[in-house]
Image 1 (cartoon, one colour):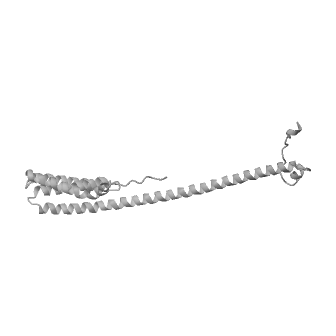
Image 2 (cartoon, rainbow, N blue to C red):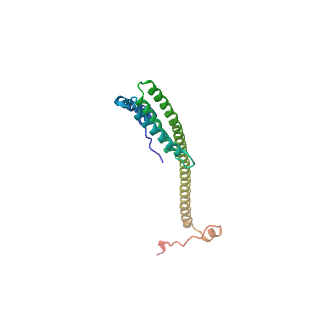
Length: 202
């Protein structure tokens, strides 16, 4: 019933929070590297990134349409479209202001989308912990009640055994007295005593 408490490392807690910024920064850096290697003012490379970004956005729109839409696929497609657009601008532009502006916008949007999933995950985690705690308390209460009941039964059985032993000893002592008549005990409501052989007679 007792679950071990596992303390997570602070890096494991901080990694999901830093993931959106790391992802957009990586795309910006790769775009600038691509810019330095011949993509600056390259119409063909820009057109390629536009086509890829538009294709990813279209795939995301189709994935999110209808009741059977998959939010995971749609989110991945839209994220890919934004990353391709950022990489295309970072590779085509000749200066840093526009790529940095798009990087800031993309990072803000990524954190806005991620915050929604973090809230949902946090709510689910709290609900699970609350349910687990409630079940643990219910099981603990049942165990305490059963332990009290078992203890009471043991105590009653012990008292019954002590009473039976005391009654047997009293009957044995009474039998040794002169004028003992077991039929009088039977008439008084006590059960009929079994015949006891007296070894002195043999």
